[in-house]
Length: 313
Image 1 (spheres, rainbow, N blue to C red):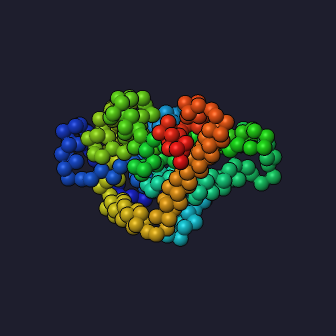
Image 2: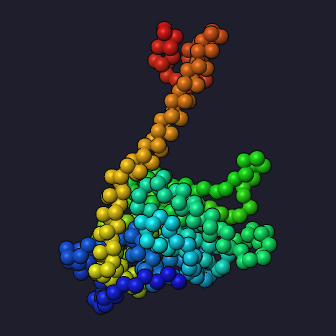
Image 3: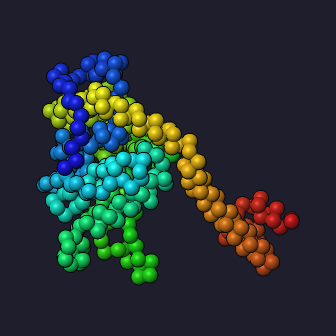
C-alpha cells in the first residue's frame, strides 16, 4: 500500500460552515487535485474511494485493495515517484488513477507506457495469456488543466485489421475536471459523479463541505473534511505542493513544452487545411461537370461565398 508520510494534526472541532469560513481566512486548501492529498485522504477513507470509483465506472465491488505497482517515473526530474494510485476491486478490476496538472497531450504517451507495463504485470510467470480476458484494467486520467475542458472520453484498444476490440479489457478514461465544474455550476447537474469531481477541484474548505454534504452522511463528511484539513496544515505537504506549482510554471515556459503544444496545434491546423484543400479540388471538378452551386455546397461543406470566389477565379 502506498502510504504517504505526513504530520497529522488533530482536528477535534465539530465542523460546520461558520468554522470552515473562518478556517478559509487563515489556511489555504490544498485540494484533491494534488496527488499527495488525493492519495493520503482516500487511503484513509477507502470506502469513499469505492463510492467515488462507482460513480465514475458504474462498478460495485465488495473489496478494494491498494497495490504497490513498483513502477517508477522514468523522468529523472520526478525523483522515482510512484504512479499516482494503483488498486484492485475484488481482484478482478485493476485501476490506475493519474492526476494530471499539465495538459493531457503532454503526459499521454508517458501514461500509456505505465498502462502497458501494468497490463504485463497482471499475469504471474507461466500463466496462460487467455487468463487476461477475465481482468479489467482501467487508467483514469483526472485532468486538472483548463486547456483540457470538454475533453471527456474513453479510449480502448482496437484491431484495425480484424475490426475487433483487443481482448484485454483495457480502457483509458479521460476526465476533464473543469468540465465537471461547468456541469455543476452552469448547468445545475447534481449527479454523484459531477459532485465528486467538482469536489476534487474545490477552492475552499467551505466549498468542499457544501459539495460533499450532498452525497455523504455526516460521519463520513466530518472524517473526510478533517483529513483534508490535516493535509493542508502539514508543512511537509505545503512545501511539496508549492514546489509542484513552481515546477509546473517553469515547465509551461520551457521550449520543450512549447514545441509539444505547437506540434499539437500544428497537426490540427494541418488536418483542417488538408480537408479544405481536398474540398476545393472536389468543388472544381463538380463545377466542370456543370453541377449547380447549391448542390456543390452540400457535397463539399464549402460556403456559397467560398464557391463563388472559386468559380470567379
